[in-house]
Length: 403
Image (tube, rainbow, N blue to C red; front, side, top):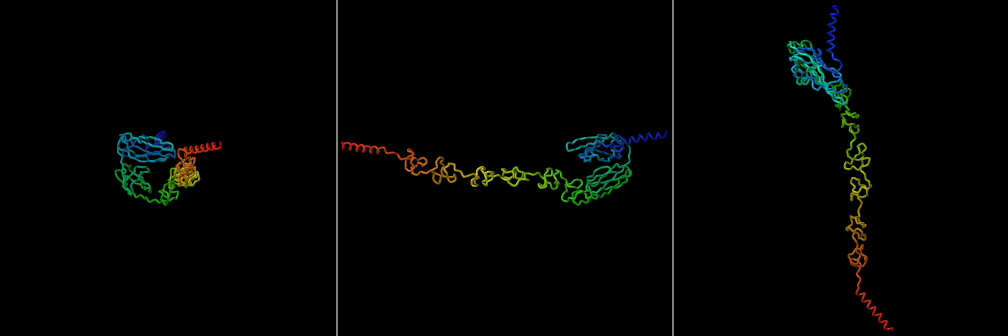
């Protein structure tokens, strides 16, 4: 009978203990379990864990909602590893009733970003609870304070004070990025304040200067400080060129182009890796990126006014012209006379007989004539008549004489 009476309370205690233990899923809880009760001033250990894809990025915000609806932000967008349990410690405020811890978290993956929330509530009741304090004087500002391995507060200055610590033995740890952790045991006496003088050792050996301590550094890269947590150079675009040497760290390229994709420096439409000519002012090019000369006259098509006709530079790539087709090129031609090819050396029409009728139009080019008679001399009608009269007289005399 006595065995049964002992067993039943033990089972009840065991069940209550199991209820306070979190499962391996996303949760936030307190050391006595959600729904439990604390006195004002008591230390409360908070534990939280978020399950997500191992490659996901998680940002956590924790809010303390007091019974009078006052909200204190305990953490704000703090990066958290998936599946890792975190702890922090707060102290029950003298505001009585139901208090809630709200855990809000954002999960970011390559494809999406989602918001989630979960909570844990407990109760604060009236009563006295004897506590003490710790005052920390540090040689460095900007450090985190842990009480019994649970995060308590962050100090931006060189001094901080933590109140409401339950009397007895505790462990205080001070952490600052780039410095060695400082840990020491303290004994808290209710109503008293313990002062700690903390000297952080921020001399961390880092032979290659990449910001990763030698004891954690797996790569020796003295010329590169863009590294991962193991101290090895990052290659954000996975092109085989580390980000320290990559001029285009977000675009894939190769070592010859210093990590950049092949461009077209002279904008001729031929990528630089096969372009054999640099001609920024000419885009009429062959497959090798060199300017074309379609008529092979030594003048590239970009500068040639007649790209399909051979010419010379004096005529901007065009051949010499003879606009009036008289056999004298325009440059030496002083006269424009289409249809007339009887010309002098200057390309002007010839007038051999000086009658102002050009030989091209003169039907008698060797005899002076008139425009009206197409360059030929005019006939004398009176002379011809007198001649005929004389002939007639002579013929009449001959007839009379010999009758």
